[in-house]
Length: 81
Picture 1: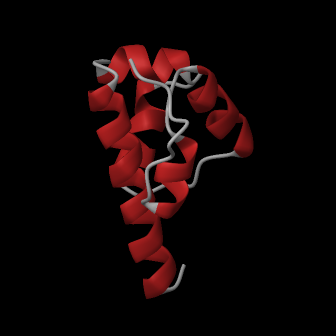
Picture 2: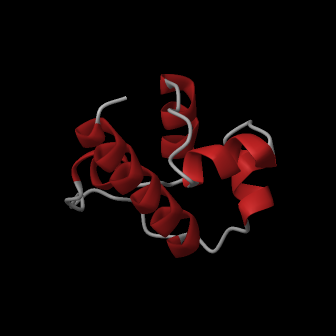
């Protein structure tokens, strides 16, 4: 990955973690919600791994503000925990 891609992935991963905290989920519970292992979640959280569209879809079902994850701008339609 390029430096720009690494920075973007780190920003997206950080916002995904912010959403996990906003929803009051532990890392293990959030990983289960996303149908992934805690190791997989750890790699995403560290910016070491991209996440697939299925993870994004499951995150939306779990109440994550997907617009915020991708753009850094909160959605006015974001679910409230």
